[in-house]
Length: 242
Length: 239
Image 1 (cartoon, each protein chain N blue to C red):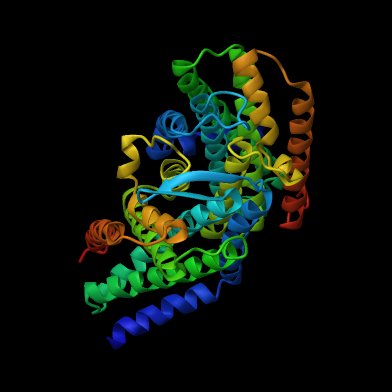
Image 2 (image 1 turned 180 degrees about the vertical axis):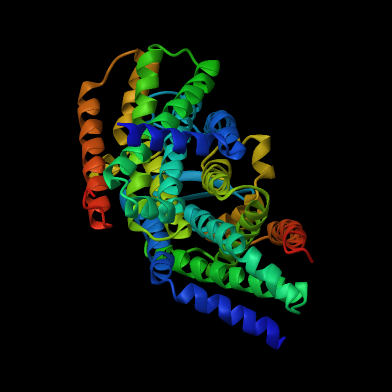
């Protein structure tokens, strides 16, 4: 445990030593979620979440929809770069005596911390426009979206070049989180169910606008997270030569 | 001229040697255009959209596939080549020539991405003025190429640069798509606002929206000036 903690601490220190990155962690989610709350017209829209017909202001819908997407986008890019840049060093750690699972745990811990932080910032900014009906569930759904995309970012870092990875994370999160999972879409295409954020965003929308939160999207979100994380860990083991 | 030609050839050869980038140039615009079209088709006919949602989706997808690809290539060209470029400058290679080679490469990438994106749009829609539509897509690629070079010159690492570019593009994409009838003037200031209007006019009506063209040219000039300014600030003295 102490070696995992040491590797985790060093990862956090590396992050902290890049003030631009820390500033971006605070500014970018605020910019993305906050600007939309400001520019979207104050119309009322009707839609369905979890089988329940609801009405809400468009700024609230857009801000609360963008919150998990923004967290996912940031965490995906972080997963892509943090893991990509650490692979060589981590392989050396394994050669030096670290057990592979210790290295993996430290890296995943760092990504989880980034995911939680960016989710807190994004949810906090969204709350300036609209407070979800069930804030704790909404935050949980946002963190789950971020974790899923962080794992997708790790996978991409190990499978494709960074340029390709940035492109895929950018368009993937936007199309998936903003277009395919948008509750305003009346007849979502079948492919929407295959999006990584399908279940976490469904949970987020229920938590934001529903009178209650069902456990099915939470359970499915955890299943998706487990599958993507397992694939990322397997790819990471392979990349570090463990 | 010889230094410029050599530098440009070097960058294009370097780009051509990356199979992932080449595959991205060809495959991703098609995927993005189609996915946007399918995703937007499920939206109701919003009053803010000048065309049906599926067409609006395909036009947005084509613009952003072209623009963001050019932006990312511009960004990575600057950041990943920084050390090598600094050494070239120390050896006497003019910094402004290096900048020109980057811009020419970005323009070339934008041209290829624009052609592929237009093909993907044309496959599904009747394009009223194909040459004009190609020109608009190329212009969009140029705008983001300049933005990518500027961001890459200012920010030190790929992670930070990518985050900034991705978030700018993300917001730009959503605001300029016309999905929301944004009430604030802010929406008209995003880089893709005018190219979006130009592309819609070229594809649907076959006309050139001159007012938007002038505004887009101003945005391009501002971004070009920004690239020159940040390059000078980053150490370029014309040596």
